[in-house]
Image (cartoon, rainbow, N blue to C red):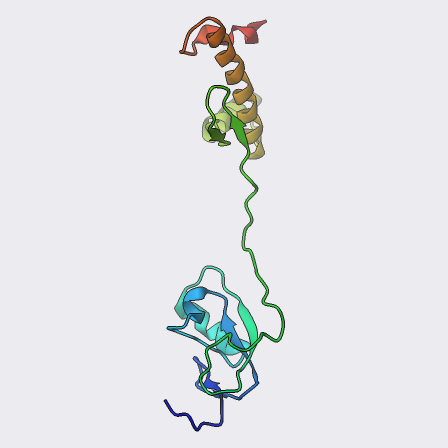
Length: 171
């Protein structure tokens, strides 16, 4: 490696020199900005050219300032601004239901077969559509009904929930 050079490093895409103290970009994906690969880009066009080959799901360019010594590792110099973190899709927190006789929690999942419910509503109504959010609401109702049936089976001294435990629905 040549120590007497008049630039910090070369761009990983176009091979143009990046001067000492100059602005450059690194990929936000750890496999690209790690010590082993250390990709650096002179501009956004070079960063964009890197993306198709890297096949990242979600990546961003982080603006950095080049070091004052040749071949100092990326990120050694302080960034010109705080790196921005982008979150692609934030999932809502999972609600849990505590079991009465167990200390573990049960994850909240859809309990309704969507295709069958949609077929029923379509056939019964003569062409009505069904929103996807209906499955969550009905699943909550099914959980409530099952909790009541479990309580009834427990009151009868059984450990099996039976159809007769849902008799309260007919009242």
